[in-house]
Image (tube, rainbow, N blue to C red; front, top):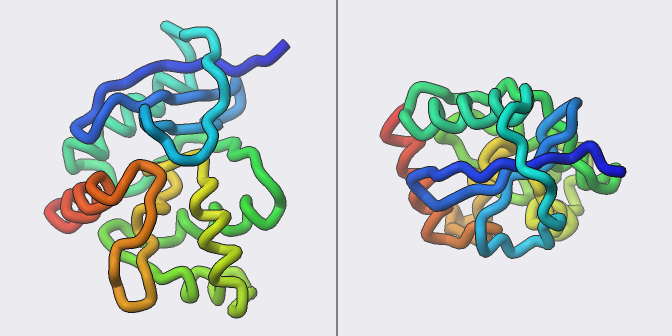
Amino acid sequence: MSDLHQRLVTTPIDRLRLVASSRGLVGVYFPDHRAASPPNYPEADEHPVLDLAVAELREYFSGTRRAFTIPLEPRGTEFQRLVWAALADIEFAGTRSYGQLASAIGRPRSARAVGAANARNPLSLVLPCHRVVGTNGALTGYAGGLERKRWLLAHERAHR
């Protein structure tokens, strides 16, 4: 039996589905999330991790939070988790290219693999894959779609 629970939260960019275990946040999913999202789990009216996630997301969207402190439990391969951890190091309102992210994890020739891992990030927003752009600074894919990515980057620039 799974200890995963979920909660739906309305945000300025859409309704998000938060999934958490008792140890940490497992996923943040848009309704049309491009990466495969897990099945629905029982709703949790009271859940310490989900309560904290909702509070921090509200602060982020109000412009008062620049970094998340929610305990995280991303589920993926060792390489994916390495890439996802590097996302947390991208400063608020900053951007990095896939190549820069590959270099940051010590794999400078793996920009494509970094892009693939980035696309599978289950913790959109919290592990800020929206801050990863093409080498020329162009906006590239985002599980939530380019309009949301554009909105998130503009939101962060307005609140830096």
